[in-house]
Image 1 (cartoon, rainbow, N blue to C red):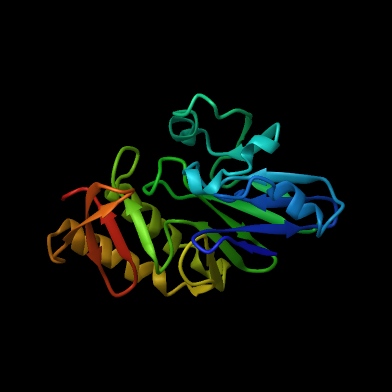
Image 2 (image 1 turned 180 degrees about the horizontal axis):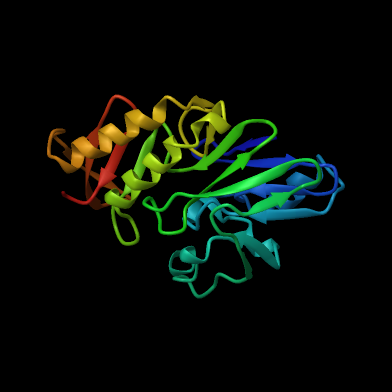
Length: 220
């Protein structure tokens, strides 16, 4: 099940014994209630990362899955609460005949992860893999780590057929991965000219438009 707020989406996956939300929205504050309209099974939450547009309903969960490296992002706001159940690269969360594999993807944020729905050959990628605009400016972001993560993901692309991002088109094909790698490498090499733009009502960043996605970066 896909919940789309217009600028960001989050997902509900249902197994035989439990269900899980992948992220909890931005403006949405009742993702748990929305999910329970589709299932009576015990409901859990996993965050692909802790940017504000992915944790809108986290306060409704006493605990949730997240990579520990995201603590530096999540707890920068002292009002954010909840017990983090750590997930690590390669961990399996089984919803009941529906195993999900955690794939670590640092770069967009330190603790970004993708969730592989193994039996359905679907990858829920969060923000790093998309055809929209990828935020790579400010603290906690690193283009070098982003490239390394995507190169590693390329080595396991035979495990999935389609990618379900949080932004941009959905789904997209896995052929986007090498294109994003090349685009990021070209940006670092100075081969793509960026243009200054503003985000969040005044912060100046550089937008690098590429064939596959736009990258919003600090000046490189």
